[in-house]
Image (cartoon, rainbow, N blue to C red; front, top):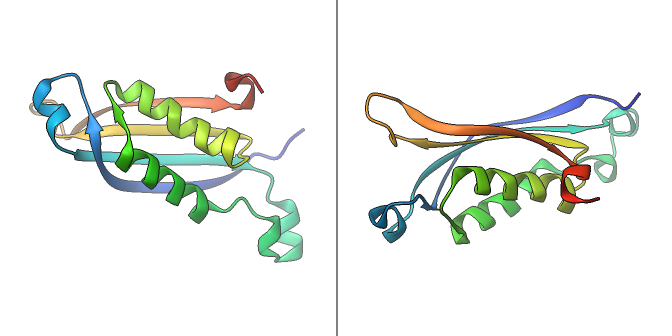
Length: 124
């Protein structure tokens, strides 16, 4: 059975173009991202060697670059793109991605989606 070790990235606050309305497409707005990345950490735990890790800093930098340069209409599409970065491009076994738009809904702190994806979801 594969390991269910987790890397947790909490409250990554970025700015990007997201939304359906014209005013949402004009300037970047806050986007809050939370990640749970699944990987087998046994080798890294034994070796204490950085070559054996799933590098969350590299993954986070890729997500930041993507979000800041992307322009999605739907948070669902942005969450899927982020999951692809984690799983396909950087080798996480599985990823849970939550994308929220703070202040998007009156009387709510934020509105968002949470998805779970693995490599098979992207045809691999």
